[in-house]
Image (cartoon, rainbow, N blue to C red; front, top):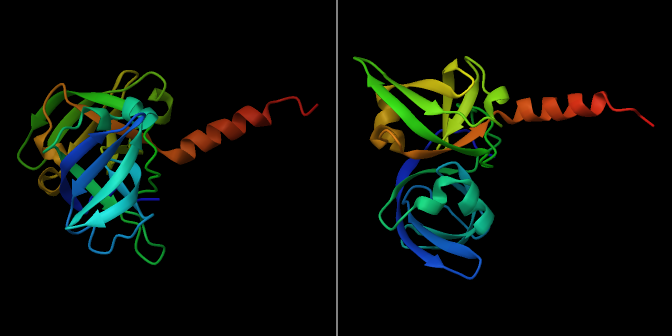
Length: 201
């Protein structure tokens, strides 16, 4: 479980192709300072398991399913990524509950800077639109954000200077692919409602 508060930007050191997966090595001095084998670290919002750690970097295996359903499949050596360690139960929850289970991807439609913030518009996949609401929470590339406007085919967020400078969202361009995770509570409520209308027989 994560909070969507990015701790640092890391760099992809290497991508080793395996038969049905990719072994990813990421440089991130902060998140690896106390990392151990088996720990969870979110990379652009995708929860990955540490299989090795050394020299301020960690290595994780990424399944083909994850590569196909997220933007991790488009990473190359040198790519900059958002990193966050798993949340601790004795710490404040500054963002919102993030599972690290990407629901889909979106593209940047437009970027509109202003004096104090930047408004960014993203595409919204049809299968996720019902979970995205105005003033609700959404995770974009591992960053916990508040939805400003939610349409049937798009949504917008406002990014403050801190978010732009501390995460990869500050370097995104129109057309770039990002990972999305919608609010998990909405999905559970929908599922429960579906079961509640079933014939108990």
